[in-house]
Length: 242
Image 1 (spheres, rainbow, N blue to C red):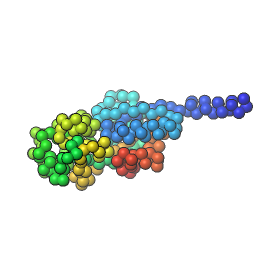
Image 2 (spheres, helix red, strand yellow):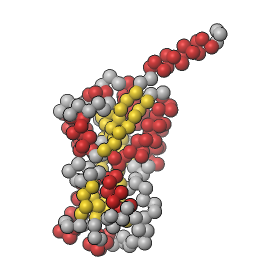
Image 3 (cartoon, rainbow, N blue to C red):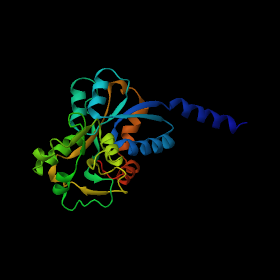
Image 4 (tube, rainbow, N blue to C red):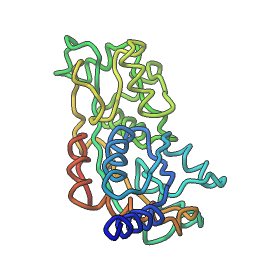
């Protein structure tokens, strides 16, 4: 009993210190975030729960009082704006990942060696809503850079987020689509859009006002900046950190 009681007290104290946090994350990063949350929960005893959506819609929900504790955005501008508006804590934002854009077809035989020709020939091209999703904004910048805005105007199918853009291509509803390079595209064929074709897709995280006193949220954001998290992020096809 002399050994068991102190051990029980230690376990009780650890459980008492553990907290839960609700973290909202951009759709493109959801698979990586799930792996990160699982590793973090197992390592720390905290419990991070995730919810995902388009960055623009999530920002609107945060501004309207949604009880999220931390935000993993698909861009850098939205967290800054939320902090300026009083919905997030200034000085807590950092770049957790940098994404890449991929022109993708679910058909492994489709020739994308000349992406401009392939885009002109496609009946439908899926793009995430550029007003809500940074990957959609990057896709439109790439289309303009390639001089295809006029050619694709009537062919673009706008999805709510990058996940839905991927689903449109995977289902065959769109012959081609601009998706996150981190998506599961191994069964099709793709062309990685050069970085110079669009603004960097820098994805920033920030502690939200609702989570100011939430130790699990703070610990998760700290943990995201460490080596273990960076290894997971890279494994999902992103550049990790600043």
